[in-house]
Image (tube, rainbow, N blue to C red):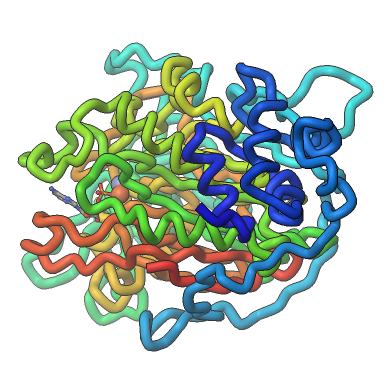
Length: 540
Ligand code: D5M
Ligand code: FE
Ligand code: ZN
């Protein structure tokens, strides 16, 4: 087998069970006889090595039984000419995706957080929860994680935990709204005389229409509930169709004469400030944002994945230093009815073994961060903790940062809120087509940002794990919001936050065909962390 390109070499190494650093692959590609050099390098690597490093290759090339004459040739530029680089759909290929709201703004703010610029090729500190590397003396970690439930789950499933999680939601989100209205507790409003000006902050407890076509929204705070009427002829009536149960709102209005209800004049969402200025990296570096690989499904697109992995080894992808995976690594088992008929691999652990093999084709010096999705082998209720030890052991080859769903990952000073996206089904089902749809999944994401919560509505598609804290609140505005799940590519900016829903690597399933879901499979959105500009590359 000819081994002239880095991509072929990476694939051959992955076939032999090795993940490899990009430079190691480049060195092998530059050898006079890459095939012999590869054999020698594999020979030189310790038996228990999972990753082939530059050192392994150097020692193999230098040793007499390797390919001694190759040593001097190691700086030869790799030949990437025969790599299939696929189509680049810069800024959203309109033929593939007609109506994406392409991000156009180029806000360039200096990164606030000093970041470690040195390339970490070794083992990053194992993350659990939000702990950072504790050892002093070392450089700060380039990737930090916050808002991850992993290792901190306290939920016992008792009723009291539901009370705690909603109380925490109220505290966190009412804090965001407090400065904007002169609010009173529900019980105090109930005691005020008719005609008074009132304001309240509460979670939406009920939304109903009155006999005369007005809307009644009942808000709940820690003291009780109070009903607010939004009359049908008001501008704000349009906002009622955006409301979801359990989200946090502030309203201002006037009490009725009998003081039994208040008429709403203004309604506020916690929202992201319009003037939000995102952080950016202070050097040119890129991250690939993908999700929904679904290894183990008959529809998993191995060829597209291989082309993507091959591309990552090319010069064009040299700035891609991060790969963020937003859930559904594998197809899982028993996730949906009749799913077993479409499984290629029936055992869940075998699925992760195969997934791990596919990860090996990704350059070893790309830092990977992954969260689970609803097809993964962790609890379905959100927040989902990260993969357990058994699954981590299967995926050791790549030293991925394995964190919970959701998590906020800060990369080169840019914060990325990673959330799988099950609530998007709910937002799309509840909101009118023009405000959120499967063809414009990023617009559904905008509403989550506006509500400052990744999964406002409890119930429906979403299972919520009762915890003392509400990990699903978006406490800090992220610079990038990255989701998946709906298998549709869509991106745009909301108040300068880049929202990306990343498509999938699974062709249309029988179920999706039956309900007319046409997935966007085999796309890799690539974000410039220094500008937050996005380029979509197609590999299918
Ligand atoms: O789901 C991918 C998308 O397809 C997501 O929008 C849910 C929807 N979907 C897929 N299969 C089903 C079934 N059987 N019932 C309801 N909705 C479904 P993912 O979970 O990422 O595969
Ligand atoms: Fe999925
Ligand atoms: Zn999913």
